[in-house]
Each structure stands twice: as C-alpha cells, then as structure tokens.
Image (cartoon, rainbow, N blue to C red):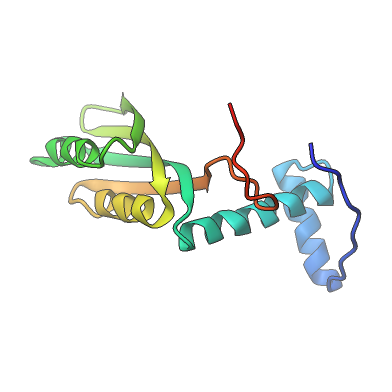
Length: 145
C-alpha cells in the first residue's frame, strides 16, 4: 500500500456541513475516505476522456417483447470484439428483463458501445458504471494479478 500523506483543505462551512451529511449517509468512516473516493472518481473520468483502459458494468432494463431487441443486444455484444467479459440476464416479470454486461476496453469505445445499447428502442432504463482497469492514478503502473 502507498504511504499516506496528510494534507489540509479549506471549505466554506455550509459546504462542509453538506459534505459531512453526505459521508454520514453513505457510511464513510471519516472525511479522508470520502475525499479519496471523490479523487479516484475524478481520475476515472479522466481515463474515459483520455481513452485509457477502463472496465465497467452496463445495466439495462428492457422489454423483451420489443421486436428484435434481444437479437440486437446479442449481436452488438458479439460484434464488440471480445470486450464483453460476461453477461448476466434476469427475468424480472413476464415482460421485463435486467441485463448486466461486464465490459473492458478504451474509455471512449466503452462509452460509445453503452450509449448505442441504451438508445435501442425497448430499453427502458440503464446505466454505465466505469472504473479504471487496474492503473493507479499516481503511478501509472498496472496492477499484476
């Protein structure tokens, strides 16, 4: 683990009070943990914008009775050149399905792929959640497994 370095910040009182309420609601142990997560989120956004390697999950809720939608989802995943690592499919009721697609690739291509699936007719809701692909923002070195 990296060495922790202490630093200080100055915030307006109302902003700090809102921040403290948020970290309490989310269950953080202290302000430092919450600030570290905010900084990491910023670097993930930079990774996407600079087209670095990312991993993510795309969650979709869709009407499986929509003509050709299931085929379009499957075809898109097959055509994504091996970047789909896994898919989980759940039947919510007789009409609606939830699908979680685990993706890996360059930030912009993953986002473009997700946007394409989210815009398909019959997809009712969805969200892409990204993180970096094992690259530490400070070191630039990938973690070995």
